[in-house]
Length: 120
Length: 111
Image (cartoon, rainbow over all chains, first blue to last red; front, side, top):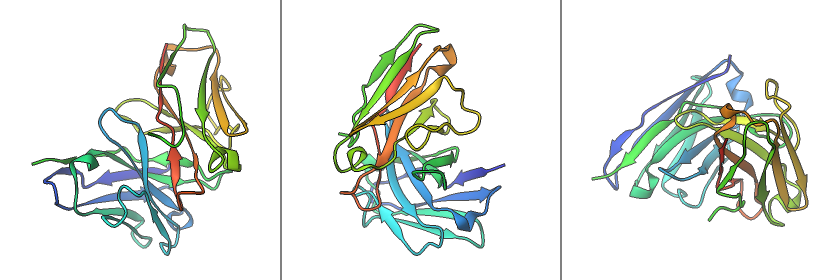
């Protein structure tokens, strides 16, 4: 059974940093790209970042480029999101998600979500 | 402002049929990129409902179907059930946003 278990959310002050983790099990982690997607309060889903299976290529939404860093440790089956220079508008539930090899590469499994609150 | 445009809300009575539209442009859906649909209940993880425009993952009832034409896509739900009440999102890629998946703004379905 595929499982994505997230940790690391919480309350942080503006300008602060936080690192999210997503521990994967039930599939061959190093064969799949992984994404982070967030949902701000009362808003829709927003794609944040993606890292390919080897970790050698990463992409970011313009809203987080230069502040967030996605990474993965394939030896630990774990995905990370390092968030720096956090702003109030980064407040959201963050989901990690596995990219499928199905046609069009949809996100077929999602973590349970972790709340990040940026506030003084 | 989302790259993909969805109606904020739709509604229907039990047993009825509803359609949720997803309107894109020549840089995303119109460029031939696949459209996926997700079902999202509050406080839970989103669930893949339709992938590659028209395909249902294993376990998704055939009451849910997807289509794509030009720069737009649609999700159709027939035989509405109370448990279908949720938020629905379309998702694709945009060639103007390097590596970026793009989501629609979401549609709240009320049954």
